Image (cartoon, rainbow, N blue to C red):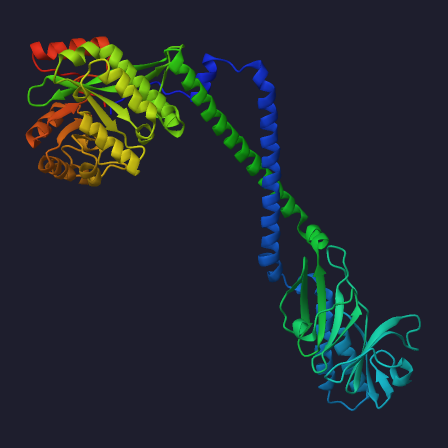
Length: 550
């Protein structure tokens, strides 16, 4: 199928240049546009928010160590555990000057420990800060927590050596540490919980911050936990059974990740709004083109041109293909590829086919009646075969006007497969009535060898992509002899599309092809010129056109 050079148009702007939008239609169109835009923005924002939260809960938050948010607490816990070990390793005599100097050196090497003391029984004998002292442990009262390691913890203890200063006292073995109470907050402003864990009894005691309801096993597993929309991360000091826990809910997540969430939601809104606008424009463009095409059928903007088909052996014109043309009132042409595709997506394709049948009958009736071997081919689609209007048009404008069905060839287009039993039955019925059946653009799209046996095919039209490969060493060039051989074995004639040069013509003539069409012979012409071309080819030398184009 050959198309002349078109000035390709933006279809929507071309249509709008012909007829402006009715003012009465602008109001509903604006409202529809706004609704689509708002829906797109909201939908995009919701999708982005959901995706972002899923990524946070499933990917980012589990990777976050509570160490980063509970830095001071974690450092303190590690310091306490390490300090006990260093104190227990002192070899000097207990409470001797060397012993006290060693304790002071250890305490000064820490960040959160205020003092270290040595005790015998229930009495504290000496400390790094006060030196020799005697303080009863019983004055502290019962411990808040007793760990499996034997360590005991008291909170808010005020020592005589430091009046007014409340500390946390941790005793393990013969040593005790006075620790500065630390209750830091995360960046979201929520306190971080300090939890003591007894793995033997399963006891979990929250000594600072919000109460934690996780089990000892869950805390010591060092794995993040989820409870509903809350994410709980814990970091435990190895060997000390002290855990620092942060609970993050939606409010905390927003505070921590508000900027990336806002940016992603904004991006989602932009993408959603853009997609809604594109969809709306595509729908309007299709609807506008469809409506404009419907009106074009009534205003004589649609017409037919005919591209001659030449017999390779004699060079005479033996037929032509009817090609649809749409010329706007501004004298601009709309590409057939665009408007025929639009028609095939709607019910207009049969309107165009019926228009082609009526026009062929009106313009070429005398030629088809008088030239017994002249054939006009009309492109049809799969929808036509199941639409009663198509069969009625053939009866009304071909048979009833005295045109023999043998003068009409029906070209099955490549855009849609003929895959229904009713459509195939219609083709066989039309062939039985005398209509010729062509396969257009053979070798591409949906056409295959199954068509040849099932659809009573008379002629195949070899697509121009094969014609253009003549003289090359491509796969398409190697397939040409096979295609021609299959057609010859099945008794099917061949029309070569897109013949442009003398070399191509010689090749196909030598290969046994029967007919050809292309710019070497003629471009598509109006009906009046086709009549002249057909008559001249019978009384003069073979028809040849310019050796270029496509």
